Length: 256
Length: 230
Image 1: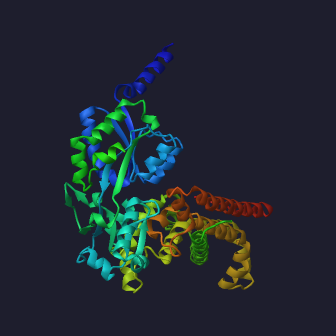
Image 2: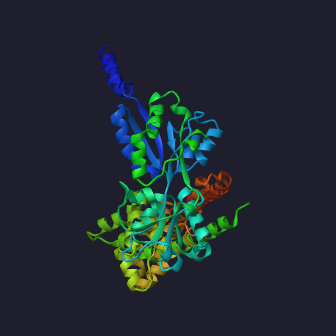
Image 3: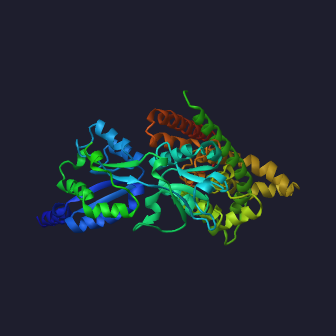
C-alpha cells in the first residue's frame, strides 16, 4: 500500500510541470538562430510559456516532420518546404506567413581584404565559400548574384560549399576561405556588422529570401503555439528580427 | 543502375580515397602495430589510447579540430604552407590526411592482435635458424599475421567509404575532389531527391553488408585469434 502511495506521488511530481505551463516545440532554420533566441526570451517573459527549440537545416526538419517529429511550429529558411508540408496536409490551413526576408552579405574575416564586388571580380582570393545552392536558400541566392554579375564560370573553381549557412560561416571565420556569401543575420547584431569586412549585396541582385513559418498539425490543439505566431507578428518581435538585418514582409504576402 | 554523372564521380572518388587511405595505413600502421605488440614500455598505454581515440570521438570533434589545425592559422596549416603545399581543407589530400586519423584504429588493432597472438616462440625459432630481422618479418610474421592484415585492410577500406562527418566539415563538397558518396547521399536527402538518395544509399548498404559478410565467412573457415575492439 505504501509503495503505491510513493508511486502515485512520484507520478504527480513527474507530471506536474507539464500540467502547469504550456510548452511549445519549435523547429528553427539555422540562419534564424540568434534572433529566435532573443524572441524566445521576450516571448517566455511575456506569456509564461516555454519554448523547446531545435535549430538546423530546413530540409532535415522537413524530412523529420514528414516522419512524425513532434514539432508544433516550423520556422523554415524558405517558402517551398512549409508549402510542401501544407500540400501534404501536415499543417494547419491558413497559418502560414512570411516572418522574415533574409539579407545576403559577402563577408571576409581576412585582414587587409575588403569584401566587395571589386575583389569578387578580380579573383584575388583563395576560396569563395557558399552554402550548397541545391538545398540552402542563401546558397541559391548567392548563385543568382554570381550569375547576374557574370562571374558564375569565372569563380566556379574557387567554390567551397557548406552544408548549411552556419558551416559556410565557419569556413570563412576559421580563415580557410578568404571570403564567402552568408546570411546578414549571422554577422549583424543591433543593426551593426560585428566583425570583418562586408558587402551587403543589393536586393536587386537576387530574388528575396522569403522565410515562412507554419503551424503544424501537432500544434493545432496547443493554444500557446498560436500565441507564439501572433507574437512573431507583433512590434517587439519584428523589432528584434529587423535588428539582425532581416526585412519584414508586407501584409500582402502574409495573407497569401 | 541509373546513377547520374555526379553520382558516378562521387563513387569513383570514394573508391580512390578509400584505396589510398588503406594502402597508406597498412604502411604506417604495421610498424606501429608491431611496436605495440612487442613493447613493454610505459608508453604503450598512452599510444594505444591515442590510436583508439577516433573510435569514440564524434567525427564533429575531429573535423572541427582538423579544420582549425589545417587552416591558415593552425599549426598544420602553417607547416604545409611553409612547405609550399598550401592548406589542406577542401582538397583530396586533406581528406586523405583526415581519414588516416579516422580509420587508424580499424587497421592497427587487428594487425596488433594478430601479431600478439604469434608469441615469442616462432620468432626465437627463426632466430636460431639464423634468420635476420627482415627475414623474420617477411617469412614468419607476415604469413602468420595474414588474417589480421586482411581484416585490417577490409575494415580500413570500408570504414573510409563510410566516413561522413569529417568530410562534411573539412571537404567543402567539391565535385571530383571532396564530394564523396556519403556526402552526395546527404545532399540528395537535403534537396528532397529521395529517389536518387535511395539508389546510392541502397548501393552503399549492399556494399557494406557484402564486405563484412565476406570477411566474417572467410574468418569462420579459418579461425584466427583476431578480434577488433578497444
